Image 1 (cartoon, rainbow, N blue to C red):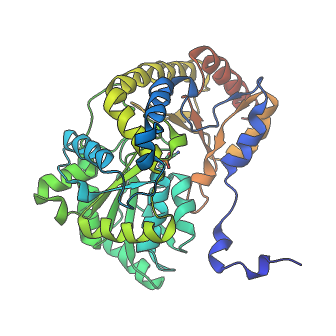
Image 2: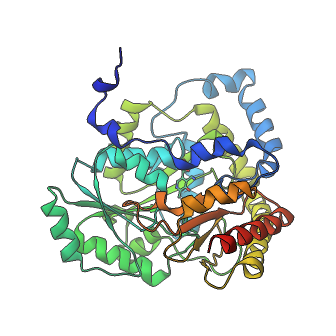
Length: 402
Ligand code: PMP
């Protein structure tokens, strides 16, 4: 007997992520993998976490750390985040902040509170596939918002209405986007706010990679620019998503949302119903470790990953045929390659695996599955030597396939 026919309609768009399936194949040490999207575990602030966890489980402290706590999140952590946001041009109070189990959970909750089936979610082409995965459960329609390709908003709104819903939000990564590594300029950020204003929709700003800048000047978050224009966060349509996954460690599952209070209140109700709260002890540990080592640890990551990005860009110059195009990010974890139009990233992966090098084919990052002639390369997991060797292998595979 199968229970599958009983599954709700929303499950139909849940499919196994190509990346997860692929990661299973990558145990072999002779494969050089650019397929992951994860931080290098050699650079977790392990000692700081060990101490923080030990302190949190001492007799007195354990009564708090091992106990239930509030849905909003651990107050000292929200206060640290309020200071952090202020340093990035986002004045707010702890009441504008909700702690989530990673920013992935925030994406799910935002889908839940904004999307009725048939509503339109605007995303970039390509976008973070985990966001599509989170939103899919709420059965939206997707349309394209690309800061550099300004389609008339009237057209976007009319198509959303014709599809039986309305545009609820635009989801974008402001810095070093997954998968492209591209950062929005300040003008593009202002244009996103103006276009959202014209559409009457929210902006979801995914800032997961904000701290991983290896060169150039930081650009203010979209939320900071909007507060600058409106005077207070309470008048803002931007919802900012932060995460400790790329700066401290993803296994703790601690991220946060910053938004106007009514949005936070609705998210708190959502969290109460879904999982009550983010793990108390993890929030306490993250608060302590952030207080102690955030800046110095991020400085270390910038040095390590910055060298890897440079190694990858230099290797691409050396080994790619002239027909291949790629992004030149200033930070993050990814470089995005565009192959000649007739080539297919998924097909290329099969050949690449034979040559013992792996990447993620780009098609899955498009809400409409288009643009199969792309691929994502991660550089955070390999040292410069392996990056050079892996890109050399990839260059050979691409030449052979062309
Ligand atoms: N947003 C982006 C753009 C990401 O790349 C990721 C993780 N790969 C996430 C959100 C989710 O991160 P987390 O839930 O660990 O905070």
